[in-house]
Length: 199
Image (tube, rainbow, N blue to C red):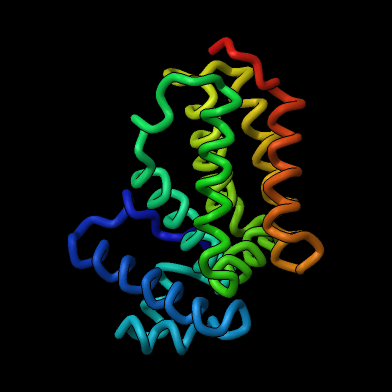
């Protein structure tokens, strides 16, 4: 069963209902992490019937991965592109990686819930996972490109995304500090694209 994507929702009421469901999910996860996100609790908080919730999101994993996608979209939309113009690919990509790190580290319980769902999502949530991957890859590729990204920049962005996720998990499980994560990502970006002065 597929998740009803925003673009597939016909009416404003359906879009608003989906937004309320995701808002409720994020509020619950912010307070109690992955375990706190129960379908009945989400339905109650969003003021929808449990059956309605399941029509929009067939499982907790679908719900949380969709919330992660919405969060990445929000971060992307709020990014001041003028702050990323000029400079080197290294500087622009480091800016975007840093922005994403800070956003994800603001609320560890929410980040843990969304990331846990993303990491453990099975094939039934493949389209939601794919959407999240495309969002983060696009953010990183566009930061590198300072314009329209090349295919190679998308490939590099995919590798950086994987390194970023691995380090986010290390931070969430307290195997690495925020400083460690920042240093590792800086090194990964430097090794993949260099820190040359050229654009």
